Image (cartoon, rainbow, N blue to C red):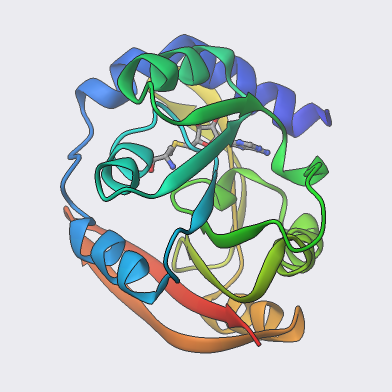
Length: 200
Ligand SMILES: C[S@@+](CC[C@H](N)C(=O)[O-])C[C@H]1O[C@@H](n2cnc3c(N)ncnc32)[C@H](O)[C@@H]1O
């Protein structure tokens, strides 16, 4: 695991409970509904940077979708196992995804990619493409302005990194995805850039 992932891991191990106490868990239900509507029947979805499994994994499992969640934080993963007993949760860094080609019908990574250095984003998008099955659906979000650095978050140092929406769009496209839709959306008072892609 690289130094940035270790910093993020240590940070979330400390703040996991606090973070979820302050989280508005319903703020992106519409985006989750749209993701589900694009999936094929009997889909298996990978939730990357799954956190405590809420809202994403829980929402998907309730709709009968098989979910595997990965995260670098053991504290988050333990909460996820409690919150969503019917999903599978594995400790894994998204920079080092260990899944076979053509494994998943869907990949979702929301409020997580912004903790990974920009220079790694393209390789992660290419890996997402590889491990999705043909026709598979991707949903990601990022921040809305180019930035990279560390700041305090719930009292711990945290790493943040974003390209501009336009650059992220180009990279997702260059990784092989066709774009279903993309937009900057305000949810719960925060702006994020959301992209739905499809493996052709
Ligand atoms: C802001 S939380 C969001 C969690 C969840 N996606 C949600 O929307 O509630 C970010 C999560 O991403 C995880 N994360 C950050 N960097 C990661 C990495 N390189 N690989 C896997 N998970 C990572 C963190 O541990 C944390 O649980």
